[in-house]
Image 1 (tube, rainbow, N blue to C red):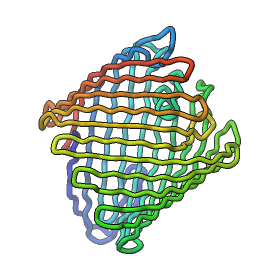
Image 2: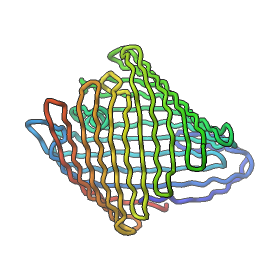
Image 3: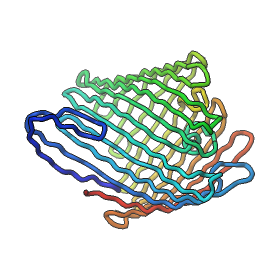
Image 4: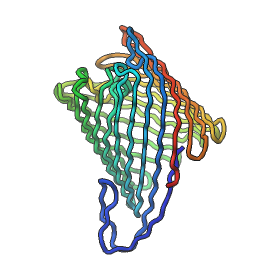
Length: 378
């Protein structure tokens, strides 16, 4: 796994300095110290997939070569942290009608400030992704290999009200656009804010109440307002087992008027050599189909350390999409990873995807080999 280097720089100056590509801050005029953490990875993958578009007939396979460079840097100055994450997905395909060549960038900028009773932070994100991947994950819709472009700006504020009470507030504005070739998908904006009041019953048990508001604005239809209230609790049952669960009600008004319920349950179990996770949820979320999609999900994951340099992993996800374009999807991923040296990793991965829309039941299988170059110290 990639690690980060740390470099201490001491500067004394009477002039303001600026830090970050696109992030600026006026540094103090007296002596100060900066700590930098940075990492770089360069995965190169070869992949074969049997039916990337999940077609019931006229199935087409594809071979892909992909390069996914990723660079992260964080600057820490007293109570402030500034971060930049840069990445790209560069794919070349043997069959353009099944899976197009891609050059998808992503960038995330962040700033957090720690103060005596809490923390405040701002993030900005930009990314591009294939609709063949993004829409299968979010609604089960399978499209041709076009592009989804996402921009978002968010803020979060955490403050301690007393020894037992804390308040977490998050706000985010998201804009999603699809390229002109994607006729079945609609651009949309989503504005959301949520506030969660936490109460610590003990060192291991915490309860909370969460209120959420959002406004979903698709370009093709009228807007929909969404409101929800949840109550929940998290419990560290033991050093190995932690659980978290909540249940609540939601209501929409505007173009989509309905009432419903939502819930989630997550569990994680750790041993000396393995991590096991389990999750159940019922939720509603904005989608590119012009509606707020309701879904039920079940997920499970397992990783096992064969040795200090070898890991096995298995992930399972089932999703039932209940609104527009009703369907069930399944994704199963198995992988083996070996650390070849301090700067090189190797991963072998197999994946199965399935979609059942009541009219057809189609699947795709893929196998990939990935070599990863890491720069842990530079």
